[in-house]
Image (cartoon, rainbow, N blue to C red):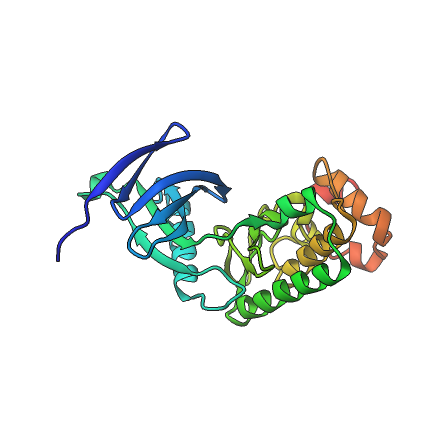
Amino acid sequence: MTMPKYNKIEVNRTEWEVPERYMQLQPVGSGSYGQVCSALDTKYNVRVAIKKLPRPFHSVVHAKRTYRELRMLKHMCHENVIGLLDVFHGARSLDEFNQLYLVMHLLGADLNNIVRTQRLTDEHVQFLVYQILRGLKYIHSAGIIHRDLKPSNIAVNADCELKIIDFGLARPTENEMTGYVATRWYRAPEIMLNWMHYNQTVDIWSVGCIMAELLTGRTLFPGNDHIHQLNLIMEILGTPAAEFMQKISSESVSINK
């Protein structure tokens, strides 16, 4: 089997090493723990998104995160969830294996760009939220929590077709989970308060925050820090009952009761 030839390209002062079939690299943003470029796949004459994961095996934590994202993307097959088209690295030996590239479908914009530049009709919001929930049902049916749902992680094309992207923080449901994951503004209270035992419902909270933002054009809970975030939530939803407060295990919140 002939190994593909690789080109070294500088993008935003970082070196990318990609097969010759991928040309015209343009930076489009960054995902969780990785940079993202658009590129022309000359084999199929379509533009794709390439995510670069730097130092994927720098530590055990990095290796687990890389493995989880790769495994999940490989098995995702749903019209509202991003899938994996290709994987490559330019290393010629294990010592040089310090970056990994994931190739995925490229969509035109994300919800963050859309909500900042235009006012959506109720019909648009309904269709977008419907697609988010369809994709999320598929993800949850596989026992996976996305953990980082936010407008910038939901891509939309010109036909209003939507895909959930960026599984860098996703993981299977376990008995004990990590606390500091989702972007603060879209983070469910249970992650901040009882952070070791949350489940798929944290993604539903994020969808609610996204839906409110699509309807109003404003972030629902734009907290400046952990405590401010909780205060904003309680201003709208009210103070939790005493029996609920007894279940809270977070030291930072217990101090501020």
